[in-house]
Length: 419
Image (cartoon, rainbow, N blue to C red; front, side):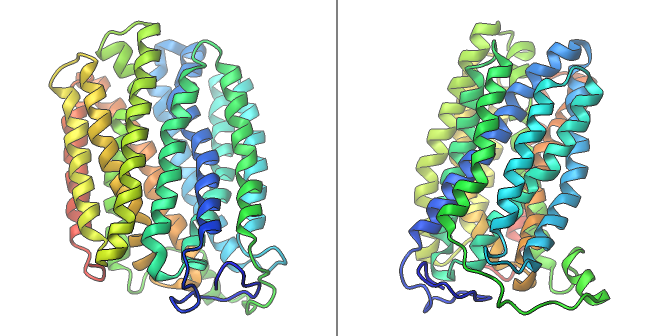
């Protein structure tokens, strides 16, 4: 299926799509910038700042509760929305209805998060937000499997990684400007979240899926679409847990960067805001530059694993650096090295994920489960960090994160079906 085709097709071959689908790439870039920028700007910067206002004495434990509860909700949401979009027959296609509804519901949920005056309300509204956010995430990433030919997947994954880098670090950079006006920062990122689905949908111009074969509602259909893959899924799970380890390593550090700067590196409010901006900018620039290179190279050489393994090792080196000293220069060095690793990883990772899918018919659900490695890592990383901080202090977060990243590299290396 090329970009001008209006007929729905289950798979896209290289012959169907001789030219790079630039418009689809643009939809992926803009969509992920808006939803991920909103999510990580709030999760990494504004949410910790709000927690301090609500209960400063228990801030690390509250962040861990938010992370854990969010992970549980996201686990079910990825499966539910991924499977629902795989089965959707509509004039707007399979993915479009869900990414639009998800963006509106996520934005409304964030309004409640912003207005929360107690920890209980904060936790509940954050879980509701995590649920609806995955109505955007799983269907949008499935576009790589639905509408991109194998010859272009590395390059389109680089598009997605490019947008991810801007969203991930740009969102934090924007949020850092509002540490003294937290509610205003929330409003800016809520608007970004609200726009993510509609803007991506307009650019995607997804063909109608009304001619897609209708699934009979049977036990086998339910098991196929609403459960974890079982058959031929060895490499799928290696990719899942490899990604999970890498993301956990990253977010063990970045999820607590605000507290690392204030409590480990002893920076005041003004200096903390400045270093959060510097770190976000360094990681964003590093990731952007590398993401534009690694994906096309992966397509050219026809290999996915080597760039991912090298990227994981760079992340391991980067997260270890602040262990050397509690001077703030170390977190800047971490940002540069880890940013290069994240850029290389993200620019190839989704192409690898598509190629280890057990069944193309359940692409959104299975890619949604793989995305749990991102969500789960963003959640488990801070949980591990909280345990370490409470037990021995901040300094051991960094070598532990490095070990986790190395484990991720080993798991990716064990994949057999992808070069």
